[in-house]
Length: 76
Image 1: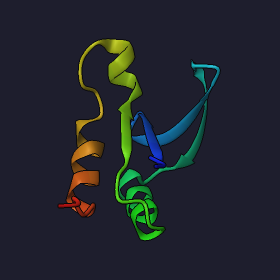
Image 2 (image 1 turned 180 degrees about the horizontal axis):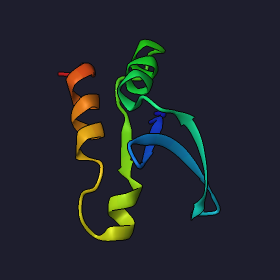
Image 3 (image 1 turned 30 degrees about the vertical axis):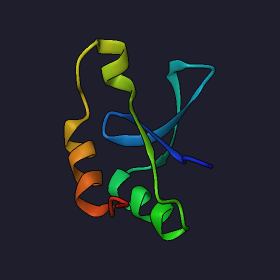
């Protein structure tokens, strides 16, 4: 089973270089659209990580997570 990951930093989808928050590559400015693309490609589940929140110890990307939840279809 594959679970595509959406790593959130400052409300955008990123990939970090060796876990370094200063070395982030942005691959989408629209996390909700990225989530929809993954589901349209046939992935029923997504792994969402609030990187800012992980480093801060509290949720930091709630708006992006809410936007993702608004567009994805939850498998039953």
